[in-house]
Image (cartoon, rainbow, N blue to C red):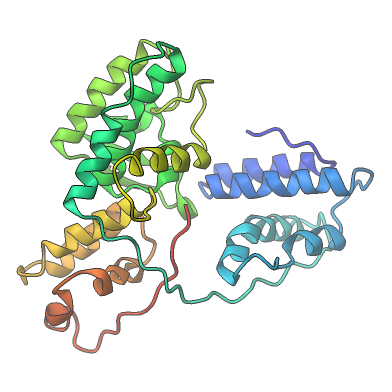
Amino acid sequence: MRKYVSNLAPLMCEYTSYMQASKKWSATYADSLSYFDRYCKDNYPEVKNLSQEMVNGWCAQRDSENNNSCISRINAIVSFVNYLRKRGLTDVNSPTIPRKETSTYIPHAFTEQELLNFFNACDSVPVMPNTKINTTRRLTLPVFFRLLYSSGLRTNEARLLRRTDVDFSNGVLNIEYTKGAVQHFVVLHDSMLKLMKQYDTAISSLYHDRVYFFPSIRGGYYTRQWVQENFRAMWYKFNTNYASAYELRHNYAIENINNWTDDGFGFNQKLHSLSKSMGHTEIESTKYYYSLTPRLADVMTAQTDENETIPEVHYESY
């Protein structure tokens, strides 16, 4: 559990323990509550109890935010306030959540050459300098990004993957720390399972009794910034078009669905299986990829309910 520093620390610890026990805790909530905790410490160092001014000040939408960004930032605080209200621990009103906006985001369409370039860069991290941090990076980058590419994991799911979450006997990942606390399981491709076994052996010689499958130099888990910086470093070594690590997840979904367009039998079953594997809470989130998949528009109506509407969904954050 993170160490909170404001006067609200005891209540935050109780809330965090409750959410973890309820299997509702996530990395996004942990980050958001920590930022709010620091905000309270810096701006209200003498205030002992949660106040409306604290909540309103933090949850007010910023000029730099759209509605969806604001929602992502304040969701944990709204949940924290509601937790306290239900237990009679505060009379602060829950902040108003902005209305979700339809995203117009279109993920990058990777070419085969771009992906080949990217993974060649990951495989070519220099051996020197012969330091622990460089050796860790050289071992980790090829495996971490291939896992995103081959499994459709969210970047935070890969970052927070624990060694005990990997079932090497059956080739299955237990994804517990995820968006919305929706635990799900991912079956690895045989080639990815082999690669992860090799990595596990190599990295274990550097980090004995590690908790996280991809340990940082301090033995914890990697940050979002680490993912972003290393993806960009490897991507722009040979490529020029903009892309992000998260778009490997989109590529995974699109490539899977693209393989079904000539296979009417079992289409819906495959769609539901993909949705479960990707950790979507609703099938509509998976259906978003219909609009991004070549050739699917012509067969979509024939392979789904005739009256079914394919809705817009909101782009999922890291």
